[in-house]
Length: 558
Length: 80
Ligand SMILES: Cc1cc2nc3c(=O)[nH]c(=O)nc-3n(C[C@H](O)[C@H](O)[C@H](O)COP(=O)(O)OP(=O)(O)OC[C@H]3O[C@@H](n4cnc5c(N)ncnc54)[C@H](O)[C@@H]3O)c2cc1C
Ligand code: SF4
Ligand code: SF4
Image (cartoon, rainbow over all chains, first blue to last red):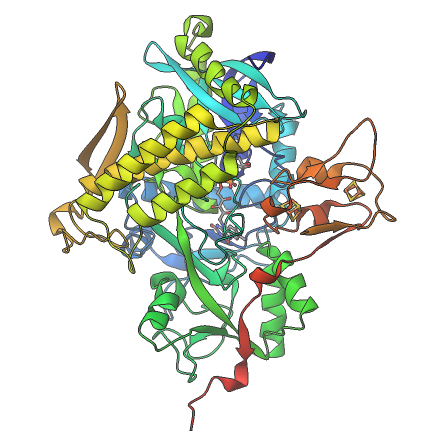
């Protein structure tokens, strides 16, 4: 058995030191929580999707956008709005500018042009929903703020499992991977917040099938939704695929930072929104029709290019600076190295493989999940929206509420929890076995099944038969992985634990996709081709109850 | 290999290994040798190690399949 190297008791344990997790730690301390520990898979200075920077912060400012309801309506009508609960969107937008001011005060550059300016992701002539900022220092600033308040951060400590006792959260099991030899860390915690980011690596990597870490968002965020799923937390919107788009074949988020126009090879714009480069609006076609880039290949009218030629030198200089704020320095360095000047070259774009981005754990307005004492925030949440602003907001709310709840709670005795021994023996078995498939084989096997049996539209369809076959194949693959996989050191055990989580997410997706008997967005059912208007105001939950997968619809929270 | 460390510049401080979000380096704190790029295929090509290295000893080599497909902008016009 892998040994336990440390035990901790805390009021509030946070899983993931990304944007949501750091904000939760800061807010919990400000709200009076005593011991707060962040368990981080990597290192909070450079982990997660905000590791290098971001440059658009969605927020509401009355002077800019008019009444809050106008922006709420505009967001709900957009592709990113469809999966949200209006209640949570309204609540988070209402307080969004307070976070902007707080970040500005802490030293994150929220006014890189000297004043608060809204840019990008906008329809011409309409209010621009995102504030332009420079996020290159955001992780350092948030980490410093958390530490300053006494939040403890354990780096290289991915969380493997959560435990429930007496119907509420009781603690967690983490892996100490600071050494070659793995060890466990067992934690009793009165409250827990999950903020492990979106989930990558479920599907065959679109741009480079042989390189599964070439992803638009951080590839090390992989399957965290499963930590909640295994203890019965409800998931939502798992069946509605999310597909990001960007440059081909170097997968990178950040398309809103490009100022050019998407064009056909004959120079015509592919969408109706832009005809020339513009730093304030960009070309929103890529947001509202992000499979455009493969649609135009399928119908023969493509490829589609992002074309910045025609921009003034000032506009191009602005874009270059913005690429750095957005965390795209690797891409800019590559372009410089290859002498690819955007003034003279147009870049082909493509849609990437599906990810769980803003799909996953359901939270309420306290950022609490359906498991009492378990909170969640950020890209792993299924009904609160993805991106910097919801991660920061729900992290903050979750931290405040967890701190308040922890004051009235006692620790639950983890020693009596049979699951603890069972899960430690389970993870230890991989370290003890000498021969068998490693995490990489398991990850590729999973990706093959997901890509063929729970595929995303618009190119591919799902049916009940395809999904039933997929569930059976995935169960077989999981059984074989559980019984034969090997993980000779702490690094490979961390990766194998990710694949186990990913495979749970895969099952949740397939069961939810089976239950949604209609086509909606990129969930295309060949046996239910229509979009059912009666389901427009409903959310589909998928969850485990006594070991069985359950699904149920509920009304959207207004 | 994605990150390439120049051993002549490296100060053997281990910072790259500490902050890499993909854990791709192996660094033995006791031996204090130049970190080994142990799991190169897990690199996200995020640039964080390059940005954090105090000695500017790291460069990123982007693999050939990641090529950014492009055409000269002045070819985007109707064909006669
Ligand atoms: C290049 C790029 C540009 C972007 N630009 C923008 C933008 O301009 N505007 C915008 O709104 N959004 C943008 N995004 C998205 C934005 O960065 C994310 O939405 C945001 O970081 C989400 O925060 P989070 O806390 O949910 O997750 P993250 O910040 O990704 O953090 C997740 C954390 O959890 C850790 N973790 C994962 N699993 C475990 C585990 N099992 N145990 C312990 N720790 C774990 C990870 O290491 C990581 O630190 C961009 C993303 C990228 C990649
Ligand atoms: S951060 Fe730079 S100097 Fe330090 S060990 Fe890594 S390569 Fe060497
Ligand atoms: S580029 Fe990023 S993922 Fe690759 S080695 Fe450097 S820090 Fe790690």
